Length: 286
Ligand SMILES: C[S@@+](CC[C@H](N)C(=O)[O-])C[C@H]1O[C@@H](n2cnc3c(N)ncnc32)[C@H](O)[C@@H]1O
Image (cartoon, rainbow, N blue to C red; front, side):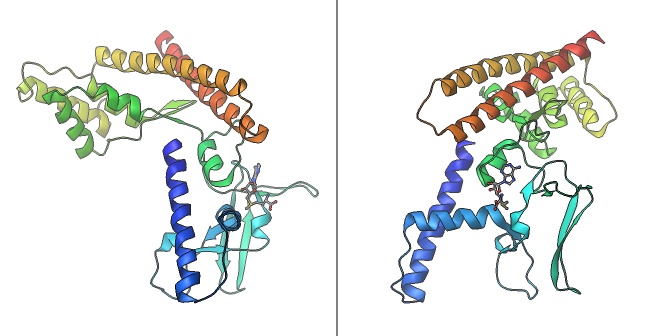
């Protein structure tokens, strides 16, 4: 998340200097906008805008085509809301349709997208308890594991790349991602004799068959190593969560709202890790 905050800040700084340049050079104006004024307006736009396809094709990156839609931007987000929002060319109105029933007097929510709490905090400044889109990424842990300068390691990383399984190794509370399982199944393949030996090639084919769905696992031993690794990483990360929670609980330099968000993030990360450990335990007992 630190990395994402860094690039968010960079984007802001870039926008600020573009606007200052534009005001000065293009408009030749004396209007000065302060850093804090621009920050306030930037956050207003970025927390309230929608992506909008222009009617006429203009020379602009589509992802940059944002618009503010009055009224629509009053609506708050909830993850379980089913709705659609689109511009109706016939009525010339931006229409929001809800497929979730609401009672008179209830707050009507819309859905900003399948965002986890890190994304919600980064882009909108809030978190939602029990957000089912929360996940933990194990990319760092996986690539640390593959750090050895050994021939077979780089071959394995190449194989991951070639097969479209390089990175994005997520853990959800009720599921270990297939991407992570696939990457780990390959990591724990033991080369027999040398890399190009027939036996090793046979093992790699077996691994590829778990991707195509022909086989569920490479071997029983391989599967045990995969799950043992996930289990031990989860236990390590729970310790980290506890440490961070202790830090957060003992700090008085963070505003209370932000503190609550941080506590929720670390507690929910811990919940995901605990659920995965239980998941592994349950599958062992079956
Ligand atoms: C598009 S605006 C929604 C309208 C806003 N609540 C208002 O009063 O004008 C997005 C902002 O609303 C707040 N927000 C939206 N959904 C929320 C939620 N479920 N819980 C807390 N804050 C929320 C966040 O501050 C977010 O940046």
